Amino acid sequence: METYSYYADGKWLEPWSGEYFASENPYSGETWAQIPRCREKDINIAVQAAWRAHHEGPWGRMSPGERGVMVRRLGDVVAKSKHAIMANAALISILVLAAG
Image (cartoon, rainbow, N blue to C red; front, side, top):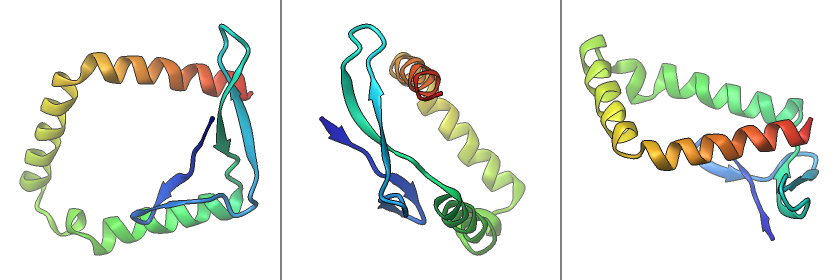
């Protein structure tokens, strides 16, 4: 069974509390993964990292036109990968619903 971390500040992190919750396959009822139970400290770490990335990283230094080019490139990748993205989005939705 896979145990996941969360991604913030350019690295994979374990939840500050050390807590995880079991994610069950809604069809079989079997636990297929352990998901980090992120709490306020984890959220603050992620928000602070996002703030630094925006204000100190390359995105914040780009002109609107440069950011537009990057967003269009992202759109191209999404369009080419739409079936895999849709499958993952469906799985994530199920996980969120199952987690309550």
